[in-house]
Amino acid sequence: MKIKDKHFKVLLDYEQISKRVMELAAAINHDYEGKNPLFIAIMNGAFMFAADLMKHVHIPSEITFIKVNSYQATKSTGNVKELIGLQENIFKRNLIIIEDIVDTGNTISHLLEDFNTLGADSIEIVALLHKPEAVKKKVAIKYQGFSIPNKFVVGYGLDYDGYGRNTRDIFELLE
Ligand code: 5GP
Ligand code: MG
Ligand code: MG
Image 1 (cartoon, rainbow, N blue to C red):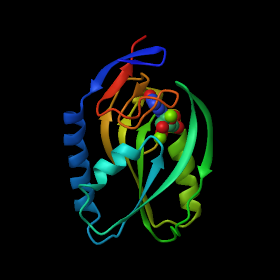
Image 2 (cartoon, rainbow, N blue to C red; image 1 turned 45 degrees about the vertical axis):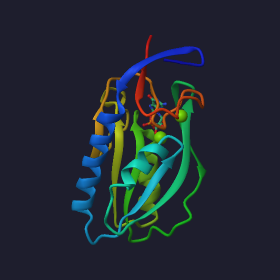
Image 3 (cartoon, rainbow, N blue to C red; image 1 turned 135 degrees about the vertical axis):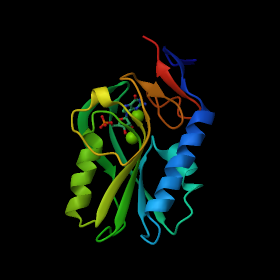
């Protein structure tokens, strides 16, 4: 598949993704019974994953959205900026951060610091994808979808320069 000037091939198809998303939701339903979690989905990349995951979360819970950005085209700038901040009071809440992908770990570790400062009771991460080879700041990902090679990926919410978010499958860059 071609997006703008680059070629991609399928890494994970929608069937594999859906199956794993349901497993992640089942684990969360089990662990968070009676805990009223507040899900915080990181826009834009996590929008599709968050929507599919939440269809299978059956415990009482809330979801909200924040926006951060550290990527320019296909490279991390390592410079995380919070673009749209959190409106909810997270004091004493059990938070579950929904991320599309943990790459260097910069974004998530920055968010963990902020949420800790604001007095959350517990914070766990559900990330669809993880690139273990790219990690610079190690964070514990309690609910992880897939561990993938250190290649740029698009689709299922993830973009290449704004494009490619609207696919069911996840694609990797051909270089
Ligand atoms: P970090 O390096 O801080 O862990 O990753 C920050 C964010 O960059 C991720 O949440 C994701 O939105 C984006 N990102 C990381 N790796 C990729 C990738 O391979 N493809 C795309 N499209 N975005 C990525
Ligand atoms: Mg993201
Ligand atoms: Mg992006």
